[in-house]
Image (cartoon, rainbow, N blue to C red; front, side, top):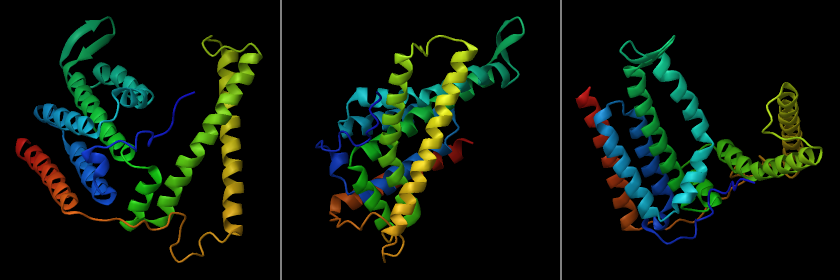
Length: 259
C-alpha cells in the first residue's frame, strides 16, 4: 500500500523545519507562484538549482520525493505523448502519420521542469512540519476556515479511503482477479470498484458532516476545526521570508525582461 503521509519526516532538524510555518507558507507559496509564471527556457536551470538547494536544506530523503512524484508523473506522461505530436509546425522526425515537432518538445521541457520544481517545493512545504500545524498556520493567516477544515478532513480521510481500497484489492485477488490482465471484463471490474469506492466515500462524508453538525460544528467563534496555534516569531523567520519574496520578485522580473 502506498504511504500517503506528507509529514512523515516533520521531526527532522533542518533550517526549513525550524522556520516559522506561517512565514514558510508565504515564502514558499510566493516562490511557487513565481515558478508558475516562468515560460522562458533560459530560466529553467535557475529553477532547478533553487529547488534542489531547498530540498537539500530540508534534509528530506530523496526516496520520499520519488514516491510522491510517481503518480502525478502519470499526468506528465500523458502530456509527453500529446505535445510533441500535435503542438508546433517545425518537424524534427516523422514516422508515417506521426511527427515529432520542435515546439512541442520545448513546451514539454518547460512543463516538466516546472512540474518537478513546484511539486518538490510543495512537498518541502507540507513535509517539513506536522500537517495540523500547517493548517493552524493557514488559519492564523486568515485563510477561509471552511477551506482549512476541508483540507484537514481530506488529509485525514484519504487514509481511510486508501484502507478501503486495499481491502477491496485483497478481496478481488482472492477471487482470482489480476489487475495486470487486459480485458474488457477487467476494465469493467476496475470501473465498478472505483464507483463503489466513490459512493462509499460520499456516504462517509455525509455521515461525518451530520455528526459534526450535531456536535456544534460551525457554532464556535473560531468557525472551524483547527484552533489557533501559538507561533513564536524570530528575526531569522522575517529575514527568510523577505529573502524568498525577493527571490520570487527577481524571477518574475527577469521573466518579464526576457519576454
